[in-house]
Amino acid sequence: MRPLLLLLTLLMLTIAIAPPANAQDLPQPAAEAAPTAAATPAAPEGPVEVPAPSELALQRYRSGNIIWAINMALGFLIPIVLLTTGWSARLQAFATRVGRYWYFALCIYFVVLVLALTLLELPWAYYTDFAREHAYGLSNQTHAKWIADTLIATALQLVVGLLVIWVPYLLLKKSPERWWLYTGLLAIPFIFFVILVTPIWVAPLFNTFGPMQNKNLETRILALADRAGIEGSRVYEVKKSEDTKTVNAYVTGFMNTKRIVLWDTILQKLDEEELLYVMGHEMGHYMLGHVVKTVFVISATLMLALYLSHRASKWLLHRYGGRWGFHSLAEIASLPLLMLLLQCFSFFGDPLLLAYSRHNEHEADRFGLELTRSNHAAATAFVKLQTENLGVPDPGWIFMAWRGSHPSIGQRIRFMNAYKPWETGEKPAYEHLFQAGGK
Image 1: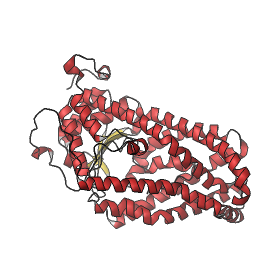
Image 2: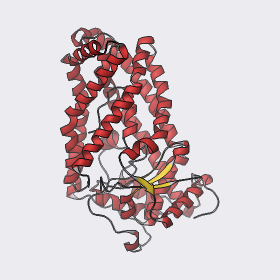
Image 3: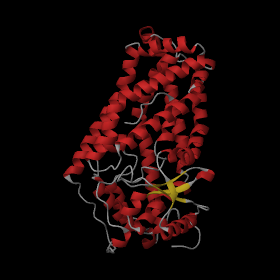
Image 4: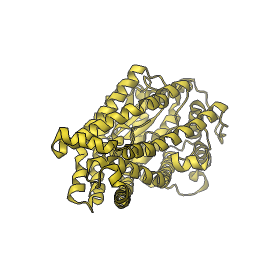
C-alpha cells in the first residue's frame, strides 16, 4: 500500500516516489512473456476482437476491488484513531518537550509519525505489493529488493517532508485565514520541480537506466518523435525485469530532463509496430501538454480541498478540539485531522480527476493513432497486455469512477478498430502538429 497522506507535502511527495505522471498508461501483464518481435507472425489487418477475461482475471479484479476498499477505509480509520485516542496530542507534547523550538518539534513529530505509520502499514504493504504480485506471477522482485525499495521510499518521504513541511505550518501560523490559498499556489512550482528532478535524482535510486540496446528500434522511435514535433529526444531503457514482469513505457521529465523511457520487459513482449504505437501515445501526452495541464488541475483541486478542510476544521475543532487535545490547525497535532479531511474530499473529488485523466488518455490514444496509423498493432498491443495481465476489459462503473485513470482496455481496443479518419475523408484532430516527412 502506498504511504497514507500525511499532509499536503506528503500528498505532493508521492509524485516523487511514485511512477511518473504517464507511467500507468499500459495495463500490467502477467507471468508469461509474449513472443518477441522476431518471432511474432504477421497478423491480418482487420478488426481485433476484445478477448473475454479469464476466471483468474476476474478473481484478481474482485480481490483488487476489496484491497482498494480496505485502503480507502484505512485512510479514514487511522487518522480517526490518532485523533480520538489523543495519540497525536501526546506526540505533540513529546516533540515540543524534546525539540523545544517550533521547527525542531515539528520535525520530531513528523519523523515519529511517518515511521510509526510505515511500520503499521508494513504487513499490509508486504501483502499487496509483494506477496500478492508473486501469487499472480507478476513479480520477479526478491525480498531484499523489496526491503531496499521500501527503505529508500521511506527515506525520501522523510527527507523531502522535513524540507517542506514547515511551509504550510508557517502559513497556518502567519495567515490562519489564507493559508490554504498560499499553500495551493506554492504547490504549483513544487510539483513542477518534482517532475523536473524525478528522472535524474529519484528514479535511478530504484532501477538502472541506460541507453537502448536495440539501436534500430531507437532510431525508429527518434524518427517518430521528430515527426511528432519533439526535438532532441533521448531514449532510455530501464532494467525493470529485476522487479516485475509487468510492462511500461513513458515520456517523463520537464524541459531539459524530458526523456522517453522503456522498461526492458516491454521490449521483450511487444513487437516493434506495437511499441511504436505505445510511444506515439506517450508522445501525445507531451505534445498535448497533458503534464502541465494536469499540474494546474491538481493544484486547483488541491486548493479547493484545502479550503474546504479549512472551513470544516473550524467546526470540528470547536466541537471536538478539547477531546483531541488541540484547538487550532496551526498546532502540530492537527496533522491527522488534515489527513482525514483531505482523504474525505479526495474520495468525493477523485471521480472528477479520474474522468479528466481518462479524457487525456483518450486524446493521447487518438494522437498515437494519427501519428502511426497503426490501428491493428495498437489493438493487438492491448489484447496482449490484457491477456498477459489477467485484465478485465470492461470493468463496472464503480471501478471506472474511483479507480479508472484510463479508459478500459475494451474501450481502447474498440477505438483502435474504429478510428480511421484518413479513410473516410475526415480531418484528423492532431495532424497539423506533425512535422513533414516520416511515416
